[in-house]
Image (cartoon, rainbow, N blue to C red; front, side, top):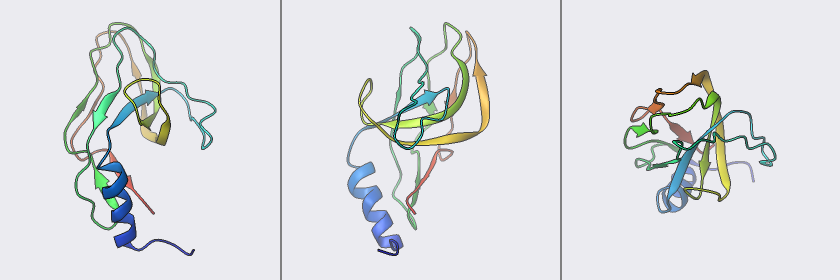
Length: 123
């Protein structure tokens, strides 16, 4: 098949990503397409955050609300990627992306993704 139309892309987003619960996790390395290198942040204060998506336009959507991770009570290290998981803990990595700017999270820091800044595109 050559590709999806925007209608097909929107169907995938609406029927899969908007009808199920997904959780955003912070990653310290590129997990690769076969998810063989998942280095998610670990720590007593760390917790994946649920993400909801807006109605897609032309195969693209974004987060409906701010995504606020808890205040770090320990050093989390350098965040280089984010991962979309199908569970709040454990589960499967469904999608991932490298960050434009990596960020070191130390004790007392907060990691936040503002509304509409996590852009997800089916292409």
